[in-house]
Image 1 (cartoon, helix red, strand yellow):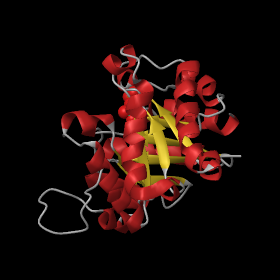
Image 2 (cartoon, helix red, strand yellow; image 1 turned 60 degrees about the vertical axis):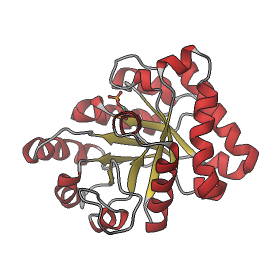
Image 3 (cartoon, rainbow, N blue to C red; image 1 turned 45 degrees about the vertical axis):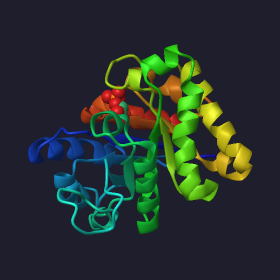
Image 4 (cartoon, helix red, strand yellow; image 1 turned 90 degrees about the horizontal axis):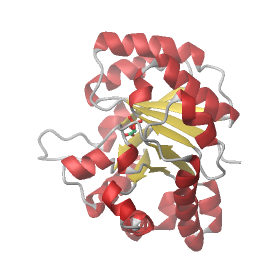
Length: 252
Ligand code: PGA
């Protein structure tokens, strides 16, 4: 059976004092999870703080973005090896905000995916359609295109050491969650697509759902057969919400 993974994506939120309060609240409450794992993906300046705090407990650390380059004249960028230096296990690549606001195309996202794995990080690859694309009935085409870009450079074997997060753009930060059935349909499509290349890798692939997950809807989403946890934005900033979502993954 696949273990579920709940990862908090703090986005550009937090401060030293807010982070301390949040981490102090969640770490002891999540110390006993066995059937699910949890991570927090924090802004770069707080990696050191989070790394130190997460020494105790069993929550993993992640970042929200990275450069596709190993090192060099890339002012303002952060490399995979720098993230490893600060204890990161995960890095989100291709979040829809990066794609839409910072012009990251499929090829760039794929290059980041490969660079993350090469350095020893586990990429959380975000895919998902916009509202216009859903209404035009091209959700599967969009998700397939986003996956194909990664498969082309990483091969299906690359997917074996990664997490995929299905995040319909229309559900992110809008309070409009995809219904469990809507999400399950796309998750099954993703698993089916990977299965065509390797049934074994597809069966083991953790596919998270992201987009307005909260304590009140997590259990229903996580009970679907192909939904293996979640990538949590807004609700990850509340200790009570995040802990409850992680508990739902533990039970589901
Ligand atoms: P949300 O964000 O939970 O606030 O919708 C999810 C994400 O962007 O990863």
